[in-house]
Image (cartoon, rainbow, N blue to C red; front, side, top):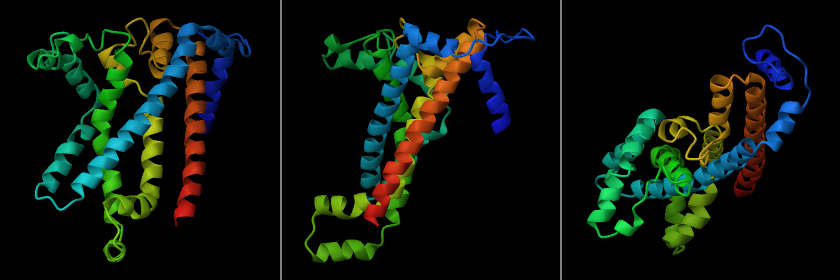
Length: 269
């Protein structure tokens, strides 16, 4: 896998168009062009903003859901299935579902009108101020249940005698959460944060199926830009340069997170 990937990455330093049997070595020109091209530079920044936003919001909601369904309520098993269900559907199906719900005449605007909040109606995916956040919301809605399952597994691995000892000490729910749940959930937090940040950096399906990178490139991410330059305009070497940047970003965030969170796990243990 490394050898084909390495040979492919070499093409980022050429002017190959994807068809020609030959190419010319141009050094770092594609990377300089990436920095000097507004749409590419903005896509790098936007990809990071989207990935970090998804990471925090998805895992915060996932943790809250896990704490909720870990309680002794009668319908907890049904809730677990219901909340996890969106995660098993393909991102494209979810994207088309939400594209209809967020359409100008879709269910969300109809609901806002019905409750007298018609001033909040928007063309959610057609407005450059709201489109990116709408996509973040779609991804969070789909995968918060996935994070919930990992957090739930972590919560259920905590021995009950730890809670019993805390109860004897008079610890309330808040103190139990910060003194028991959060430290012992460190491995689950590590896994969830790494999966969500990597998924956010690679985000493609939901963006392409809802906005295609628009309006006015306001939702263009590195992945959609790679596709556009490679298959729409035949600029393969530039697309590969973008892919190299995407790979480097994934590696940086993954290794940084792993190092920081593993240090936290060792302190908690």
